[in-house]
Image (cartoon, rainbow, N blue to C red; front, side, top):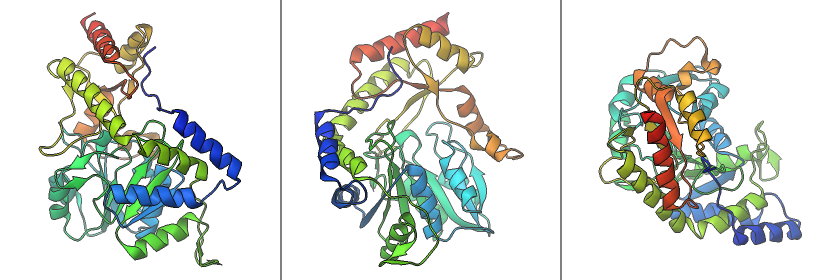
Length: 355
């Protein structure tokens, strides 16, 4: 079976985790601080605040920016539901925004048109690691604060700099399907000293200088997770290079047969996920089942969040997000794949469609 995704864990990671277990310091210590500093430096940010998941990063970012009841937040309609759920958990209203047909990210124009007098923040997503059009979005939204959901985008680059550098806060995820994994885990990145202090307080039960100054939960990262992350950072360039090689093979083989994601001029994707849009007349579930029978694991590409049960009753009509969510299929892509594996996936997929 050629799996959909597979974390790349080697001997360096195993040794690093074993050293943490032997140390007795398992939570929020020197390794977490080193990991924060390394990621922040990589992305040109002043502060990195490591947390327990990418979802926690989004929730804390909203809280640090004081988004709450009576506020509205813009959110792309095509995504894993975490950003929209985070807005709901904050007590704010989600204003869904459709995405571009080719890039699968919300455009500057769509975000600007969706903004209202109640809009307090915009979440901008780099879908599957594909960079959003950062400069155009900054110009379109003016002074409106931006939270960049860069969960999938570590190692991707805007034309103007690294993904993770957009907005007041950028949020990363280190889930096993992401470019770099810590098991679970995430990080908030910011250049604002005050926001960074708020994030550090909110992740640790509301503690500041030994005092509990605000009611908050526990979103700390473990030393075990940070040890994994630091080890994986050492071969980030190798991971990114291999993913781009595999994606290029897919694009060459499928680009003329199926619609695939396009990247803005001057930008570079990390290809966290490689997806394609199935033609009319093909049911994704059946295609995935037939691929499985041929030894290939494939799956749902993404979701039209406003159509999920957690947003039951939404009357939003966002046709591009709905089209991609209904017809999109995610194909295997991870650094350990061989070129021959990509060829086998393509052969199996085209064989299913031809049949």
